[in-house]
Image (tube, rainbow, N blue to C red; front, side, top):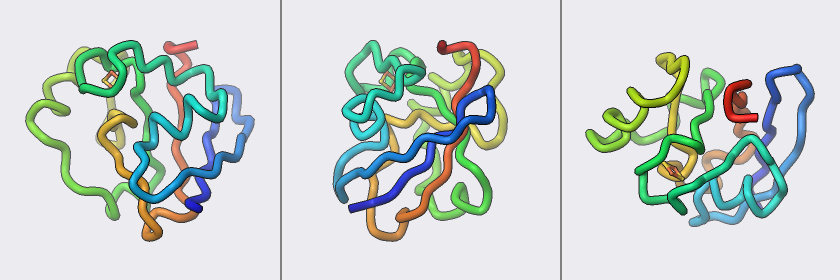
Length: 106
Ligand code: FES
């Protein structure tokens, strides 16, 4: 299992256990992280799975694809730490991952 902590806009932390090979978005939705809406089902076409990956975890992720970059431009308040959670594949190397959730998706 891959442990992930989601930190809400109010600072509250929620734990999630994902499976290696599963997307971060799927793990969040399965766990009931309501801020991750994932309206497009994970095809990088909605940006409603936007999250901020806490450093230094951001350095462990594969770079954004061109499609992800383009979609993040449609997200509200993107930062250098912004990612689409549907484009992050969980792995043992991400065990302990911490991500922050945007307030605008609530
Ligand atoms: S679920 Fe739509 S962009 Fe990630």
